[in-house]
Length: 321
Image 1 (cartoon, helix red, strand yellow):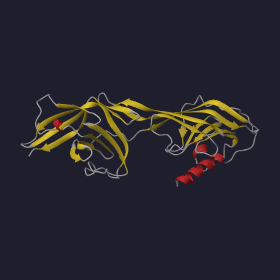
Image 2: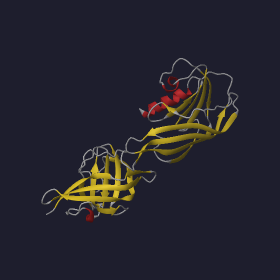
Image 3: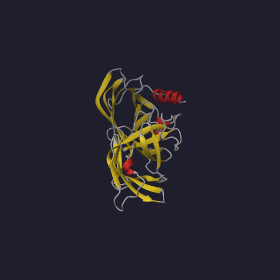
Image 4: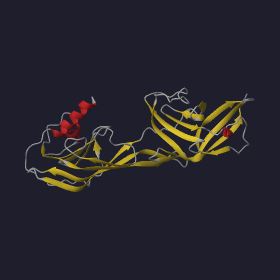
């Protein structure tokens, strides 16, 4: 189905161009900053003027939610195609995106870039989170430009625009859910990660791998004096995971090897911060440990965000012998 859609998409780019004299030697869409798109997989990006369009075809999911720069090559046969069109009437989204195009307007001029470079610069968009001192990544902005765009005019003579700004487009980040409906934390022992304390929701989990046993003994803490420990890359290692293609259960955690499903799609590791544990007695042999992450920064090796001054991982109950 995807292959069919891709072929149809390129067919739409190729079809229906009337012959005529070339009336515009260069195109300029700099005054339009926002890029539009036809579908959520961002295969066809475009900008419109009254009687002009500029279209960029890229592979599905090329706009990745990853900070950095991509440099891609334009051609008429590869994965990255740039097309300029001029029309004999007002052009709308339907003329670009509909499988069956409106009868009007007609394309009067059409140029396909035969060479050039696409540059995509991507950076995260932050807002202040609900927890004090926290930040949240809501999405990523992709600034797209071109250099050395070469295209033939109506006489077949190659023309080049050295620099061309395409604009910006924003993709959402909907997967970083840090709301755990159940405040109950869980405990298990792993052959690779030692004692693990964790909490999870439908598609995310947060865990402390190889937690220091001194943080969770079966002994109440004095009022106002919680136990504390620094997180690190070895002991008290904080890990936040995002999953797809399956449901999480308590049976998933601490297994070796890690189960194939659900699939881990993102891993964020604690860079800095501390753990704070307040322990109270629930019964003669039962203890409740309230585990809070303090000023923790989570990082995926590319970008990071702050959990906040005080983030509740959960409440863990243990029992003494």
